Image 1 (cartoon, rainbow, N blue to C red):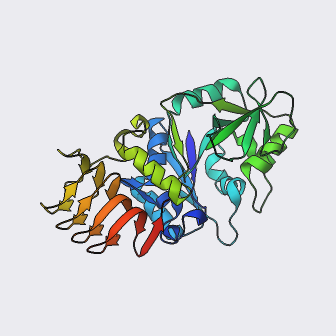
Image 2: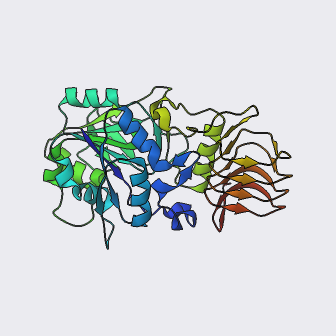
Length: 340
């Protein structure tokens, strides 16, 4: 089976950080967010993977190639093509059998094997992986009937009686039938456009609802959501088994203190860490630094003498000046974003 990771989005809500990284390339502890999508797929036995690019395409492609031995890339020049158009761009790669599509801008800890088995057994033209609607969120609903068939997406579709609302995770399993319902060109959405056409013609788009406690999902789409996910990872509140040896702490052994540290990270003997904390490859933390809870220092980042940080993610390559006192911040190279 093959897979596609959607990587063309603009990441507007995380600007200015996404002026440097496409959102799937954003650092999150031990690696880019994209790494965890690859980990989920490879655990399910899927290693033949393609991506689409649009925003900062060279950065996205370079990030993906560091994570994969082989890669198929579809670049969207000019107008971004949307999720439907993005999948259409890899039609020749994907059309020889059922395939998986993942949104590359989410952290989703899930075992895909049972999902794939259920999809094959169902005979559906496509399966959408769903979760209960997150409390307090306003995501567009996917509405199912009693047979778990999708009947409306974001208010569009044939509808029906006694439908229940669910949240879409960004993971689909599709058959090549989807390509028969795509426009020949132009931007379109796989959910609101392509799936609606399929449902109206009587094809089954199925919803698979996951309610296990071993499932975790976050879209990291705003500084606040990124910070919440960052903190949940550091406080061991995220199940990591689905990522195997590509998880957020891979290669960073747990130290004697309340932190994970790469062997090449340099911490002055005078550094005080309350933790939990994370020290990435090649980072440097100078004398007199005091770190509170939920602090990460990314790969190649530097924290100057006497700085004080609490609930801060210092992303790869960023520099915290000496004497700085920071709380609830995301720090990128040359950029600082409040996470509250």
